[in-house]
Image 1 (tube, rainbow, N blue to C red):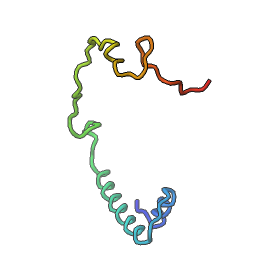
Image 2 (image 1 turned 120 degrees about the vertical axis):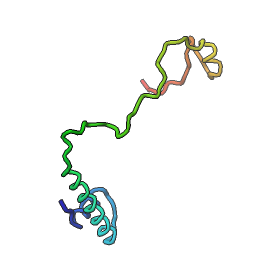
Image 3 (image 1 turned 90 degrees about the vertical axis):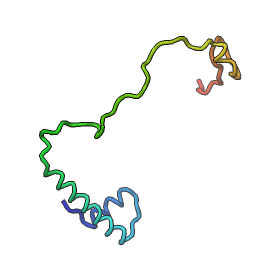
Image 4 (image 1 turned 180 degrees about the vertical axis):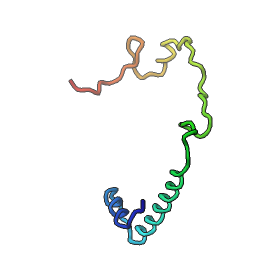
Length: 96
């Protein structure tokens, strides 16, 4: 597949990009070069290659989730501007 300068102009129009004629010519060449590389990759036999989501092994680096006691409400609410019944008191933002 080879893109023409008109194809690049149409995509630029849809993307609301203002490109000069020089930029359109340059992009047409770059995109066609990329498409040639992708065409070469399509020729490879990948039937024996297992699909992967990452090219390197990835492992979870988070700590194990363990239940533990929380802070007492007095400590949590110590710096709250207002509190009510062991909760933060905030102004109403939804009109009824």
